[in-house]
Each structure stands twice: as C-alpha cells, then as structure tokens.
Image 1: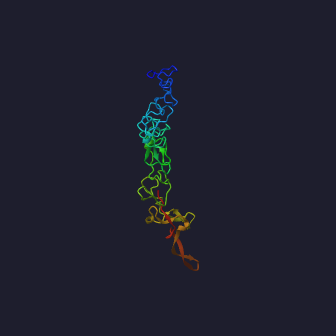
Image 2: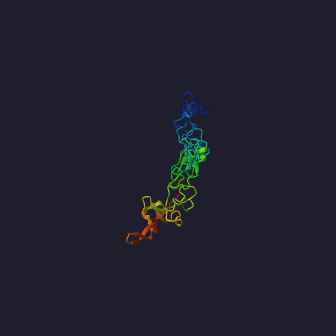
Image 3: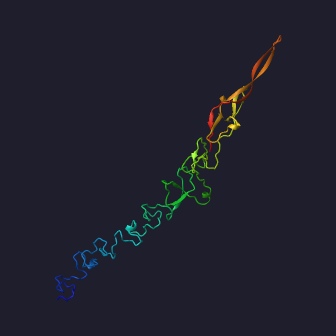
Length: 296
C-alpha cells in the first residue's frame, strides 16, 4: 500500500510504480549511479560521480567538495585558487607567495620560471662578470645557477680565497682588468663617464715611457752616431697619456755636431794649413717623428 516503506524484495511495496526504489542500490534519479555507487544526491540526475563540477554551490561530482576544480576554488588548500595566481592548484607547494626552491624542478612561486630567481632556497652567490674577462665587479646575487644573460657567472668563493679576489673596475670592457699589462694610446669611458687610462684597475694612470733619448758615438768609431737610449727628445717633452711628442728610436734621429779646426802639415820646405770639420758630439735632431704616449 502507499504508506509502506520500500524494501529490497523485488516488489513495489509503496505502490509508486517502481520496484525497490529509494534503496541505496537503486538509481532513483536515473543518472546511472545509485547511492551504493557513489551518488551523493540520488534525487538529482545532475549530481553523480561522473558530473563535471560547476559553480553552483553544489557537490556536482560527489567528491565531498563544493565547487572544487573550478578556477575560483582553492583545490589544494594553499590559500590561492587558479584565479588568484596558483599555477598548480593540485600542489600546495606551488603558490604565488612561496619562495622558489632550487633543484626541485617546480615553479614554486608561479612566476613561469623553474628553479630560478634571486635568493631562492638553496641558492649560491655569484659575482657579475659582464665582459667575461675573468674578473668580476663587486656585485653579487644568490641564484640557483649561474645567469649568463645577466652576467652572474663567477661563484663567490669562501674563506681566505674570497678575501684576496681582485675586482674589475670597468666590467663592461674586457680590456680593463686587474691583470692588464698592455699600454693603450686611447682612453676608455669609466663608470662616471670620464676618460680614463687606468686599464689595470690600480687607481693610477701609468705612463708607458718616461725615458729621455740619448745619442752618442758608436764603439766602432767617432764618425758614427747611434741611439744609446730610446725615448722622448727632451726633459720638457714627456707627454701625458694620449698626447704626443717627438720620439727618438733610430740612428736617423741622431745627428753629428762638428767644430772647425785649423790643421797644419809640415811639408819640410813649407807648412800647409787647412780648416777641417771635426766631429764634436752626437745629438738628437730637432725634428723627429712624433709618438703618442700610451698608458695603463
């Protein structure tokens, strides 16, 4: 009769036209799932384990969660939904407020970069060497790995080694470095925008040459001039870095100075006298080729 409770007996106990309905093993709403098969609302055909969760304040897929798996829902319980920037809402170790962890192959802070970023957990400090001359500037970042694009490629050493490292005074010019031994005739532009000849980073502009030229007689005879000392033509001619003056380097830059002497010859019956040019000295010529003063 209609007031009877349906029981599992293959009969229509309550005369509603259905046999064994309203039982856990019966699919009351015809959606293909009974309560025994995981249907959490067997009176609503749009709620069953096979449904896709939608934003309706209902547990559409019967997983015990309401409106989960939606961009607005925090599936992993880390405080961020996909709409709030969670890049993997099934992993609580990946959210916008997490610190990046080196070498875990995850984008922990959801910045679209894996195992990258400054001051990540497990990072290593690197000095910057933009010109890749082997000498870093005194600037460092703690990174998961070296960053060739930004120039952080030299690991910061520890202990005694680190205290004696020589830093580059101009890290965008590979000619400027602490071990530079070459001299240059043209300056570079330093960090302050000024011309500089301090190519070896010792805070000085060292002249390549401060020698004064000397000419003299050859050991082969007094009638032959040679350059005893290669150098500038005189004490007042040593140019500053990048400037030029006379430079004595070859025999042609020297000249002989003569004096006139009267020489007499006794011919027996008479005396013959004549004026002769006698070499007196070898000196630097007044006009020699100019050279630019190089510096380091």
